[in-house]
Length: 300
Image 1 (cartoon, helix red, strand yellow):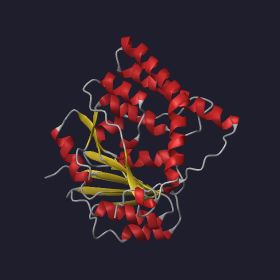
Image 2 (cartoon, rainbow, N blue to C red; image 1 turned 30 degrees about the horizontal axis):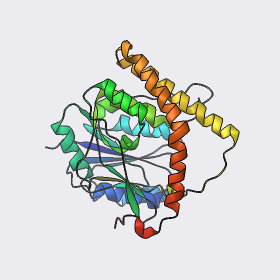
Image 3 (cartoon, rainbow, N blue to C red; image 1 turned 180 degrees about the vertical axis):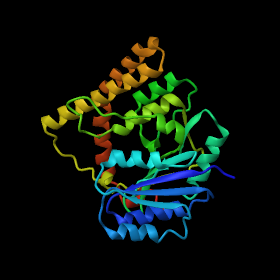
């Protein structure tokens, strides 16, 4: 019998979007899936009704509604802690995956014990009908140091929604930033995923039809606005904070003699991001906003 895969869906008061995510889970060709839905304290009975409507098509479907808003990070962690599957994936309540997603990625993990995670390709939807495949980074190197350096240089959290080995994912952690970002959650997934990269390879499906389909339409708003000096400084401090946590994680899992290389790569990455990468992305966004819809791949 195929190993159990848990799909954890965190949600909050978005029943119409949740229906799409559940529909995506219901269409998976993989035969042994449990689906956990964690409602983060929304008192909207429509959410429960949407989940109930899938009981017949998703036999192993569990719905939990927290009594209060426990925060996004704790809700994600709750789903992982409650999972019974050998493999686990998160699915945002406004996203979906291709029908072959779980089956393709589980097959890769079953055939490669050294892989901690297997990821599909990332399809970014500009609206309901149009999307484009965004290049995502994999970390297939055999050396933990090589994977860590690649991740630090090209921090890419696209594989957050990959299929992971549950036991590896449970070893990863994010305990919060230092001051002044202690109450901030932005970019927490990068710190968390570095743990995964250090513990095993992250492989990418060779089949381009294996897709994580992201419906974050806010990403198509490319209007350029002037940021305040305070916002720029706060973001810069947060990025430094992220990299300092990178150093801590690498120091705990890599040979101490490699730390000068880790720190140097980290500093160069910060310089590159601030001086080259972000300004270039801003120009690309403006260029994309001037494209006609026909220039973007149609998904349906």
